[in-house]
Length: 83
Image 1 (tube, helix red, strand yellow):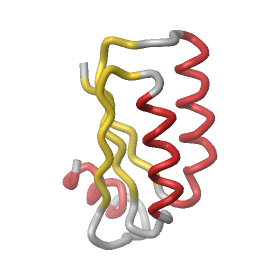
Image 2: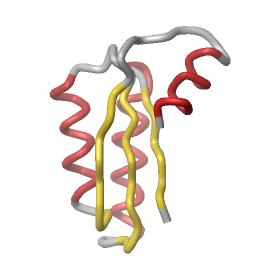
Image 3: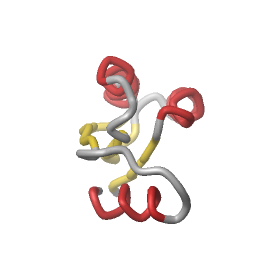
């Protein structure tokens, strides 16, 4: 199974907490995760989330949007399209 987790700067702490909780529930999942970072998220922060994901999932990859979008549903749709 492939899990996709998209996040923008306001979601970073929630994404970190979710990844930590997933790890707490199961130390090693036989699934993959794709992290989709909004362009406004600092690269170092996105890499930190990727490292957390690599500890739990068999495969973890990170991609980023080319530009940051705001507003619903435009931003959500854009991130889905990038994924």
